[in-house]
Amino acid sequence: MQIRSLLAIVLLAFQLQVRPTAASSAEVQNFATSTGGHHSQGGHHHGGRPRSPKGLLVAPLHQIVNFDLPHSTSHLIEVRSGRSNLHLSLDAQFTDLIVNSGKYNPKLSPKSVNTKQPFNVTRTDYEKAVGSLYTDTFSIAGLTIQHFPIGLGKNKWLNAPAADGLLGFALAWPSEVPGPNVPFLAALKQSGAIKSASMGLALWKQGGEVSFGGANPKKFKGKMEWVDVPARFPFWSTPGKLGGVDDVLITMDTQRMAVNAPRGIADKIFKTLPGAILYTDEFGISSARYPCNKAPQIMVEFGCVKVPVGGATDVKYGPDPTFCVAPVAGVDDTAVPNGDVIAGAYLYSNLYAVVDMEKGAVGYAARA
Image (cartoon, rainbow, N blue to C red):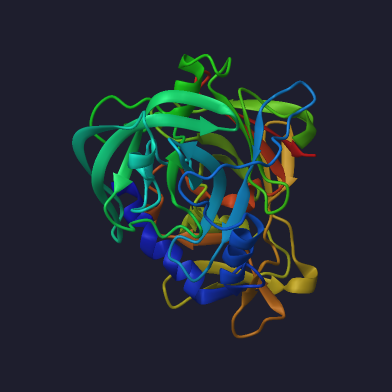
């Protein structure tokens, strides 16, 4: 996706200035160990499928963070394409299903069809997928779509930790592979597998989950506030209040942890943090540090829903680890091409979100 190339350097810079407290390559290894690694082709997953009290189909979502990679975060869900089990990273700013080479084996599936259509997708300056487009069965949380397009890369193009590929759920971003391609949420609705093209998201380090066709009432408390996405925006961009700054258009990004804001907005947020020291690092990123034992809260608000942004003490300040770095990073305006703020997973640490493609809106509620 060309749009992401503007963000790559900014994200890498934010990672180089600080180190995580625990999120590292070890998490990727732990995930591979706990799930048995990547399943062999033709394998089968025997784990029980959790359900909500009303029978809503849900699937676990694993947040994997690796600050050694330019794209640091994956929210992994297990799916089945043909007879290949895959761990895919959900991407809020992407539409298609594209996998790394060797992860999907069409020869094992009697329903696989090679469309003979080549594709060439640029996600960032250093992540470019080239390959062939297939169609095959696609199953997620026990729900199956027939003849779903799968882009099989000829290269290991994706650097997302522990991910075999990307599965996009953008609201209205056009497909980047040839031919008509219906986003998987809309395809589930069209197939009759779910009643609405909506998905509940718990983008959390512990207890992460996806629910299909609606919200899981076990995952949130209080009122759910629905916020419309402005018509001109292709991603899940909704107006809210962040760190005391009103009417900020916040765009969901499931491929990062930090919240990236233009310096003007970031500085306004930093100045509301008691005890914070504002500084600019060697990469030109505006940041704020504060004593870890007196970490202030940055609040995010959507209507009546108001919760703290997570990650206040996750990242240590390199020269003095008794100080922590705020989860908001001030960047150049061109690094936030859609909306006012690019919101990584820290923003959703205490939120439960429901994306609805038919409403063109996001529902927000406090985490249960």
